[in-house]
Length: 315
Image 1 (cartoon, rainbow, N blue to C red):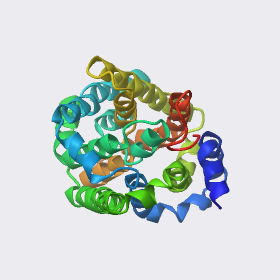
Image 2: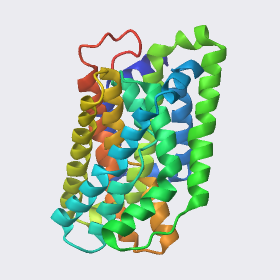
Image 3: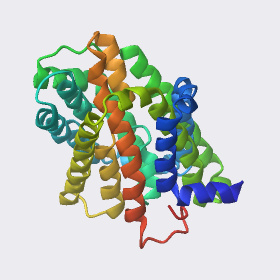
């Protein structure tokens, strides 16, 4: 079993592509997983949180400037990039509005896993994730209104549930266990990337399966939507790299790369449903989910090259 976990973690890129194809060809494989995306994300956060302790978190909290930079990049240039790419690829209409909404979304919950695989600062990524999610009900509607002129209702209840049950509680539990039993959990450091890869793949299947029919129905235009998603995703990596102007710490720069480039796609559907807006506005986020879940392992594998593998194993 352990060998299988290592194998999945070390070949995650190919497993991601295979699972994405499976979700498109056999949508039913992912339909039943759609209802358990929340628990899968919580499990992913728990696994990742076992890699750092309370002292690591305290060190990060003493440096609020890092968080301010992350907030600025996630909600600043990425929001503008979402608006610009929406106009470039779709002109006006629901898809353009959806691409704009996508740019304003907070960091994806899975970002700490990719930071771990790329050998970045996982504790920093977890803090970034929690703060960005907590502020999203107040930031996203303001940005979306400014960029599109459209009112966005705040699904405060679902966001609070996500923050508490999916992010905070698993993180507190994982960090608490690592702090209380450091020697035991440190012995498994090389396996956490592999363990985290399993729920990551299941989440991907849960995203692709329910959206397979919609993706296929778009025909050739699906490539246009995917192109818009890929463009915004690559711009996210570019904006993340600007953190090098503020820090020379390689692990921190890696953390910014995934914090900025990954977007919490499920938030789009929640905002759209709460606002009574056309369902098509959430479509760019669904495409982005698949794109980012493919590009992220590729980027992590590239970044991990040349680093000593003893801490987290091969990506």
